[in-house]
Length: 296
Length: 294
Image 1 (cartoon, each protein chain N blue to C red):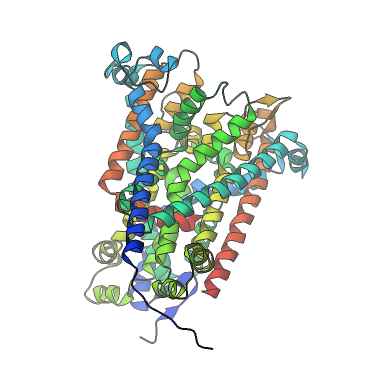
Image 2: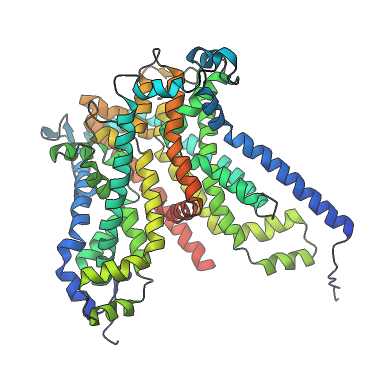
């Protein structure tokens, strides 16, 4: 099999099957590629093009250069949305990961019923953002003296409750996988050397589950930045003072700008900035994960 | 300096303490688990209460006058300007067809990409990987426009849009799996006279089963819960899905029948809970496999 070749994208192929498949391009690759162009590629390129234009429909555009970007940066509502999004993403990141790690740690101690508990913790993750938000909005507004739409602090902490309930189970699953991969002999060695529970956790377990921690930290971070459904249902950005929504996050801010006809160019520019921000976070994640892999 | 390493068996007292600790943890987690499920339980028993009783005290159990049986469920199906069973039907249809289409098309595409590996297929692969990090807001306006222009704005055609926007993760996961399949099996099939189609459907596809399940679970959960894409793409006056319907009810505030809304939330949770109970292992595995998406 000397003729076998290895190429990029990990393609392993042999001439025996390569040619016949290639001849059937129209059956194998074309449907996906065509839909990919409709559903992603063309809208993406058009989006970048439109961010440099002023428009109300995609047929009627005038070139404005960087004007939309200047307006996007000058928009106090957008800046506030960025800060609020960073705050939500940051605080939820800490809360979710600490809770999920300790739940995962406790549930890998071999206690009775841990499989059932894992199953229970995971359930909220299956519920979509809209329904999830609606359930909690009903409950939280029933407990609080005033609605979350009236006081921004209530809206913020309400959002934290929702995000924790939704994501702790998911991150727990990843942490459990990481914890179960910690070699038993190292733990045994630490125990023999007289390390107590906390010392073992801090010096042995934590460094060994670093890859899981990296994944979870970035997952919660990107989830926080991309949040839309829950934000829409819980407060829809309210309370709004002087046109600036106190609990409005970036995705919601962009969606709202799109619904104002003369703001669409600015909205598209905001969307491009948002895309760059999210991509940057993902690239840092990729790098961090790769570095960890080298060390392992 | 030598240190004595003693291996000793834990004393009876220590063992007892450990068992006691474990029992305490079990009790603690049993309590937390019950609390964790409370939101769903509260919605469940509120769906059996009258509208006025929900407003008065959301946390009270239904009793006597406030208990209305399944009336909310019957009302919920039809109240508002748009019957709920339409939304539910569209949601089921869109979810199943989109997932089926994604599984079929992207698994074939991934096999082509892995086994042909020319410049074009590599470019498609990297574009797919790239599409995974792009947030939906980047394409929301232009995608809705494109879908309208191409008349993809009905439930019958929206699976095409889902295939397009969701191809990235699916192709990525399938390519990752095809790499691990020994090519000798496919060569043997080719020598025995199988064309590419027959090789794919009778040799490669059956081997892909674990990845098909993982991708299937991820896509089902994505499409079923998705709000913004169908909201923008579908013609709202004619077609709604369950998330759109729930959000639409909330928008028409004041006149909202809370009891009926609770019933609708329960109805929208029911398929998810059944799905989860039926294949919990596959769901957890599939979702964990999707963690790479980031």
